[in-house]
Image (tube, rainbow, N blue to C red; front, side, top):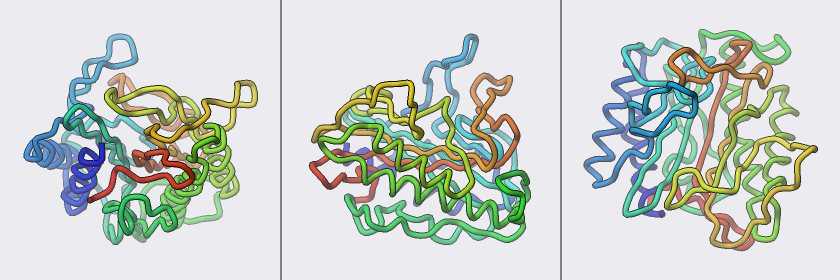
Amino acid sequence: MRRAGDILARCFFAVEPVVAEGARTLDIDRVVREFIQKSNAVPSFLGVKGMVEGAPDYPAGACVSINEEVIHGIPGPRALRLGDVVSIDIGVYYNGYHSDMARTFIVGDIGDVGDVGGAGGAGDVGSSGGVGSLSGAGSSGGAGGTVGASGLARSLVKVTEESFWIGLRGAAAGKRVDEISRLIQGHVEAAGYSVVRDYVGHGIGAIMHEPPQIPNYMDRNARRGARLASGMTLAIEPMVNAGGYGVEILPDKWTVVTADRSLSAHYENTVLVDGDEPLILSAAI
């Protein structure tokens, strides 16, 4: 899994320069597929069966979701515009194991994409690094209505990334899944945003989606979630909306959008539970 994560992190290095004004989302997918195939690996998402009745098999190697799109955006001819908030989710299957990773960029001045390379190496959980930023983000909506669109986009991307690193503190042997959920939700809601509830993180390994589920919120009507043990591998992935947490699925039966059409951001890593110190597996070796 570490090798799969290494390929995945390096794939994001290849993708970063493509996230630019005028680039098409299918250009991003082309880079993703070519990089993964040259690494003797397989895109995990390509050909995945849809969960919605009548949905086609997923036709791409990456999910590219823009502005109000939360997850599962299908790459195509759409061109990126200055200020677009672009979430890219990629999975890699290598030698029998999967790795899963997502980042959100703001088109224009991508800058430092945080810990794409591992932020000091696998297992460094102390610093989240930087995020893409740009003046003039084109989408509106969000919490409070007091932040301009560009400031809202920057803040949303930053808070989403921060919530991952804060939630990661709960990924320790002996703790329960809901500790991760509590930490993520608390940070996001303190900033005035909301966590998506219809889609959650998950276990990962020989199968892309394995138990346990890793919600980004506390469900007070449910049990506390699985107890974590060393050796478990998890895909922890806050999906954060600037407005309400409600989502809808578009007619393509894949793309998930915010119900109120507010901005959304996504941040994900594959993590190994290893005693008290979780290790980031989706990092360059």
